[in-house]
Image (cartoon, rainbow, N blue to C red; front, side):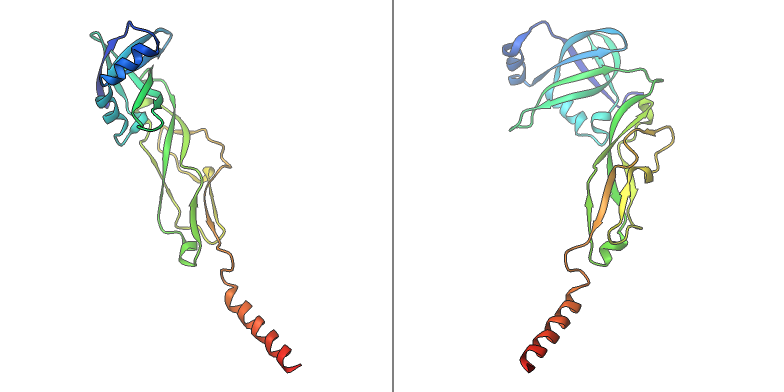
Length: 206
């Protein structure tokens, strides 16, 4: 069921000083909670955790978290990174049930060449991920959205996304994912030039 296995160690120390020492040693402080069980403070290897988060499924990777010999199916949430070094500073692991739907953020990947870009328009993506609900094993790593039918000034909304089987989209259906913007003056340059030329000729004749 799990996509990755991660070893964790129960953490007894508290405070920023203890957390700072752990990070310098390549260890990330974390907390595990969910399913009505008591929250547990743990530490995990920074390199191993980062490898999981950087995988194709990202934060939606199903992680078998092993704590002192006991395994839990979890998802990584509330991932905090250093503002400059981008190293993971802290993470929450949520215990989950394989048969119970969970909420997740899924990236949107735009595919296809929009008709509007062939006419000089520009494709602008405004929404890069949507919220979904699905059983843990059904959460997709990404959802592809076809933009090929979009013409100049066209808009693609959430209600046009085809969700995979077992996945329910909970993002507002009217939110705009992408538009084909029309550059200023597109299709008007030639006409404007002729008008200006005619006006100039009339002025010189008078």
